[in-house]
Amino acid sequence: QCRAVPGGPGWPSADRWVALNSTVGGRLIAPVPPAAPCHADQASYNETTCTNLKAAFKTYDFYVDIPVGSQVPAWDNDTCLPLETAPCSAAGYPAYVINATSATDVKAGVDFARKHKIRLVVRASGHDFLGRSNAPNSLSIWTHGLKGIKLFDSFKPRGCKTTINTTGLVAGAGSYMRQLNEAAAAAGRAMISGGGPTVTLGGYLTGGGHGLLSPRYGMAADQVLEFEVVTPTGDIVTANECQNQDLFWALRG
Image (cartoon, rainbow, N blue to C red; front, top):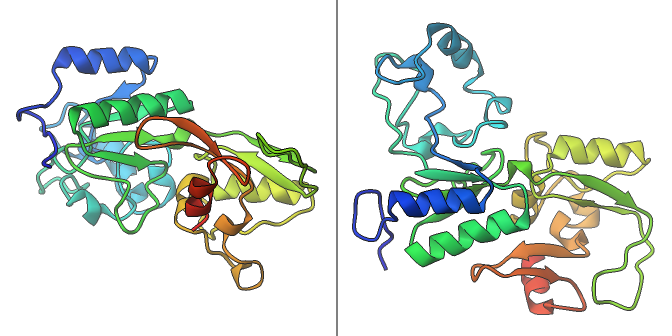
């Protein structure tokens, strides 16, 4: 079934986008192309900003704190590059972005996209060389704000009667490998993690999670004791060995 696109039949009215913005606490963003400051026909045009942007555009860190953009610009269809002689358009980027700070924000985005038949993508830092964190005419859920790391010496999965005596951590989907490795090292531990410091936990685990320790200890997804996820039906669920076991098995690959 075809997805709705801006200006086409089925695309939500401005009032419905305003309502979604209210639902997510005013964190709905109409994104501007990251390289727009280099183009005189764009409202954010600024020569000084453009000069700095050109130096940063090909670095991983540039994409960490912006709501759209891929670390491989080809996945944005090169619709806005930091070249003054090239055209600049937002056509290669999502139409709107939810700056999610909770599972309920994610649920709101999933429900809205499903109801209005809008393409949905999920992005944290844009560190996806297969382009899955970007799509034109889409609603994007930016998980950058889902952070927080807490270490533990034992863990009791929700709904289980037993406690697992092991060292580990609980972290949000937007936590960076750099942050996770530093937290583990501070506790005298190491973890299976990606080599790229701007890789985030959510995308890393759902991609299996390979790392330098994988030949000995397996994939990072193999180590997960519990997930909290939002399903395509908009349900916020816990998946572990005691509940939603089929989903837990699938998420661990």
